[in-house]
Image 1 (cartoon, rainbow, N blue to C red):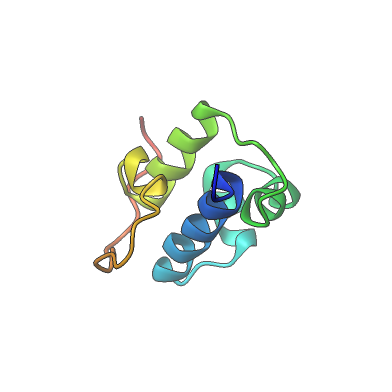
Image 2 (image 1 turned 90 degrees about the vertical axis):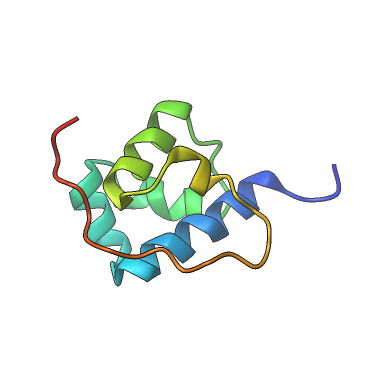
Length: 86
């Protein structure tokens, strides 16, 4: 493998989080995931579970596939976050 998918996922998560203007702390609070865990995911140090990808996608208001889109360039994603109900 010529690239590190964990690092690519982390970069994409940072990008989507920053589009919302959220800190790691805010994303942790909104998603129910630990801030330390999110930090490790963003640094490419954790192999994130599928369920957590879905939780983060829902929290950020994007499709789970958007978190796996490592292509460049990407259009900006914005708008309000969805409600907490699944």
